[in-house]
Length: 251
Image 1: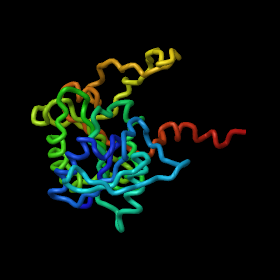
Image 2: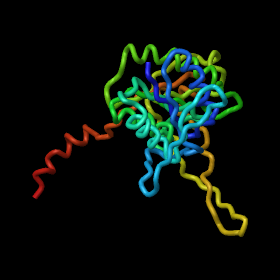
Image 3: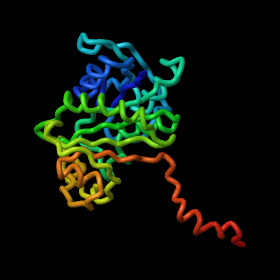
């Protein structure tokens, strides 16, 4: 299988290297990732400066490409400059920090997976909950096994899977839950600080942990399940579309 591998933390991140080392045992893998961290950049692309791509060594265990731009830039460059024919699968991750609930709207990890889905290529976004134990190697083995089933069953064009793993060893998780996106972890608070010159500045405050309904990604993580949420790129609200159709006749 041909796999394009990317992330939003940079090509030296332990999560992407764990995936690369594991997936290369069975698949043809091309790694193309940002040259540094690009977290919380969402689906951004680079428009006002050139995008640079250079070959890099991956800790002596292979080679890949470092890109000056965003995770979405990486996917676009990978699909349209590195491949003569499109890859079978795009994987973005492993991100250190969950991308569950509202956070998937801001995530560069998720943005990269969404870009692949927009181009009708199957894709996964993979993240692990921030904590003392982030089992990158175990998650990489899980992903390697999981993609065999994904490729066998498939899912609709324009949809990707957002995978979040709790901060425990993979073998200690309680299994997999197919979930929906939670909606109750929205950042609303700021910390008011001062910089080195005593000018006021603001930092996002940590979002407090919150309970969520049992069928959501956040609840699954809280119960030590691996959460898998199918995400559709088409964000049209078809219910409202039907309800306001009569407005076309407004005079």
